[in-house]
Length: 125
Image (cartoon, rainbow, N blue to C red; front, side, top):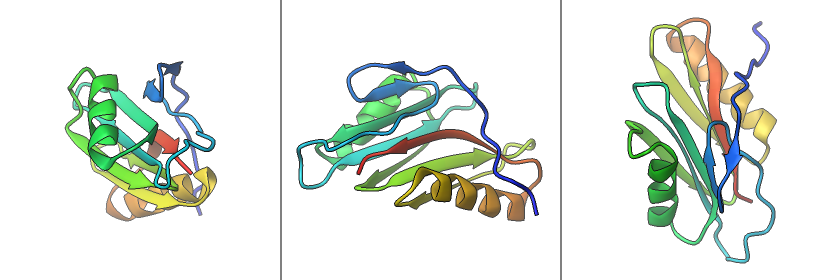
């Protein structure tokens, strides 16, 4: 059984938007706290948390990717992670905890390809 691995990327926090790897958000002040994760073909990743709508979460992820994310997934009141294999195949998962979201994303990815690693995560509980 393969253990969960995470690629460490430098994160720069920018008002609920993450460039690089993501972060954990606390209470966002809205009933539904939206977040998003995404990556681009050129290796860019972006994440957002604490957004008031799904549309705002999507736009925040794209801004973090300099509008270069080709795959974006949004979520609310939970954590999410995206994993990618050496051949470019990928998966994503969500869960109430970061570790479960990462482990599930890697498990799904490993079923499709090989040597999967988490490339981005975010939590917006």
